[in-house]
Each structure stands twice: as structure tokens, then as C-alpha cells.
Image (tube, rainbow, N blue to C red):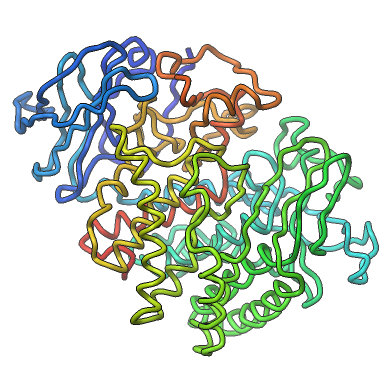
Length: 603
């Protein structure tokens, strides 16, 4: 049994939470959003029994007075799901009082939770801690520098850089709990950070300097972090004819170490930097399925464009530089239309991105926002019509990162700029995708329609954002409960009863033994890291190199459907990701803004 270690978080409120061992021994459980619920928000818990127990009603109990303050029938019996033989949704949305409460139903009793308008306050900035901790070059958490010698080029000979040419590409973020760096995930993360500041500037604090150390600098910390990423993208696209896709490769996975201790492979302290040439690339026995230059380069374009808009009033010369880079990146994306995948040397696992027109749509939509050029509008619509629905929304399986970035950001950014039939067309694409998930979700008590593929939590965040954006564009509340159920899932309303974010909420049930060198070697907290999340059991059983280190405290809640382990040995469900955490920052900022009385997705 792993010892629970709780680190300083952002909440003064501390609720009583049963230990993981107690939860494991319970046959009937009530799963909640451990962050809590807004007074006027959708409020649902899920009751599940490992036996054949059933219930007719439930009661909401004031934690202080121990008196029942709300009672309701349970409604539909959702039957079996995952480990549960019986399950119900306990909807108490009509209860709007604030305070601390718990739910009782049958033999089940929930942990104590809050109903208050500030339950999401500060959560976006809390997750931002993980981004800061993933920095390369100077790392403010470690107060040390790492990867200062990157790197040497591969595949860029036709662009005038023979293999092993020295190039300065230091900076950016480590991708996950390893130390690889990918342009595609970093650019997507940057876009989410920038969009979060653009849409919800009032929720972010200014407590850090640009280098990540303590002290305000007049710029919101989220914008400082986005600039850290933008500075790295500028290095990865140093000239119009040069663009690089990744630093390092899967040889990084051969052993755990702290980032400053990294003469691990490559040429001394230098690591390989892979050029985007639009061709399949191979180092070792594995060949990726790269077909072109578009997917990564288009993500550069949209990140640079949005950055140029937001930095115009902060640093005009920097904004001008970003805009010029956006133009050259868009040209690079058009060199050879197609997708750019990552490179693997020793293992078959890569980011197997198969779609690219969604990235081109977002890039064109961002060009439209900057220039107002009708040509950009027409290009964006043309790309939008080539991928109306993000493919994973209508399937129950996919390869790792096959349909990235898990949400078509371009539909939203383009629709906001249009009127009439074109706008309605884009909105219909979102609605069709949501309906595909809803068809699956409405069959179970968790409203779970997101497939349990690798990094399912990233898909969950993205789907919640799509529901949020659809609601913002239409004022249609039809999918609000589905949207909230995906947020609730991330913070404990799932079969395992655990939050999927390290340290959030404080004194809650959240990951304590993630697949991370920071925690495993040094016992450092990785505050705010969103872990990969549950996977189909058949995926887990067929992955290479997974071996649980400790007894499984969630054993009673594993099933033939899906598994999740809070165990260092399980890199498939318990490894935090940089880009998933960045997307979560946007979602949490939206929730805080909304509970403060703002319109979802609008300042």
C-alpha cells in the first residue's frame, strides 16, 4: 500500500477523504468530482455497486450539521459498467446552497465535497506549475540547467545542413516524464496557453518572472510560459527553408535520470534534431509513415499568429517577428501536403498522427484573424470540409496520437469569424461529433463515451472543450451535462474514484506514484501534471515493458473494460503529459471564468 503524500496546493478547504485502502474494501461507492460543484452548475455523482445491490433514492447531507438537506429519486438504472454490476446517476443540480456535503445512498457514502462558486479558483495556475517544471535550459523548479548543448541535425542535408551539423535548439519543454521534445505537441500546448489567456485573462495570476522564478513581472504567468514555448519554436524554425520536428528519440526511454544528468546518448551532451523533409524517416529498424510537411508546420503557423496578436501590446518587435515566422511556416506547410510523424529508433511507439487538414484549417483561420484576407477564409473552409469530424469521435479505438490534437480547433476559431451558412456549417460539424460520443455515453452512468485509448485523459479534456465551444457558439445547453461529466471524470467521478491530476485537489485521492523521474528518484511533487488515464484492458495487457511495482490499490475497480494504476511501473496510464496538461489549463480557466459569472469561452 503506497503511502499518500499530499503537497501544498491552492485550497484552504480540506475535505475528509477515505484512504485508498478503505475505498478498495468497499463494495458500494459514490464517485464525485472532488474539486466540488458550482451552485448553479450541473451536479451529478455516480453510485456503483460491485454486488447486485440497488437503490431507489439518495440524500445530500450537510457535513457540519449531519442533517439531510436534499433528497431525490435516483431515476434510471444504468446497470453494469466496468467493475460495477449496478450503477445510477445521482443528480442534485436543483440544489443550489453552498457549503460542505456528502451523499448517502443504500450502503454507499461519498467523500465530503464543496458546493461553492470558487471550486475552480486557481486550478489553471496550479496546473501551470507542471509546465514550468518541464522546462529545458534553465529549469526554475530545479534551479539548474539541462540540455544546454542541443543539438546536431539529421535529415537536413538537402536543406544545406549535413548530418551532425551543430544547431542551437535549446529550450522548450520536456514532452512527458521523459526528456524528448516534439514540435507538434509543443505548438499545440502553446496554442492552448495563449488561447486561455486570450479568452480568460482575468483568472491568471502574475507571481513569476519570465525565467520561472518567484516575483511578478507585469505579465501573467501563463503568458510567460507560452513565450517560453514560442522562443523554442523560433529556434526550431530558424530560416524559411529550415524546420525541425523533434529533439531526441526513444533511446531516451532506456533509463530514468534527472534531466541535468543527461550524457545519455547522442554525440556527447548533444542530442539529435530531426529535420522535417516530408519523407518517411528511419533510425534503426522502425520506419514512420510521414507523408508531408503540413501537420507540424501548420501548428507552428497558428501558434505564431496567435502569439503575434497577444504580444502586440507587450513587445511589438517580438510580435512582428512571430508574424513573419507564421508566414514562412505556412509556406513550409505547403511544400508537401501531408502529415509529419515522429521518429522512433528502438521501439514501435511513436506519435502516429494521421491527419493534417485540421492543422491547415486552424493555420488558415489564424491567418484570417491577422490579415482579414478573403483568401485565408476560403482556404480555411476548404480544409474544414475535408475533415468535418475529428475521426476518433466516431470510433472506439485509434493508434497512439493518431488523430491529433484530439479536437478540431480550427472549426471554433473559424466559426467565430464567420456569419450565416458558413458559420452554421462549422457548428454542425461540432454537433455531429458530439452526437457520436453521446450515442455511446448515454448508455452508462458515467456518461463515458470517450474511448479508452492511450492518453484517454487528453481526449477527455479535448472533448469537454469541444462541448464548451459548441455551447458558446450556439447557446445550446443540450450537451452541458455531458460536458460536465467529462470534467467530473477527471477529478474523481470515475470507477477508480481518483483525480487524474497530481496534487489536485489537496487532500483528495490523486496520483502519488506517477511514471516520473522527478517523483521516483527525488520524491519531488509534479503539481498539476495530468496523467495519461485509463486504457482498455487489452491495450494494457499487450504493451511492452510494463510491470507494476506495488500492490494495486485499485484492484477491486479494474475490469475487462479498462484499467488505471497509480503505479510508477505503468507508463500507459500514469505518466503525465505536457500537452494534455496545457489543454487542461484552458478548460480549468474556462470553468473558473464561468463560475465567476462570465460567458463560457468569452471574456
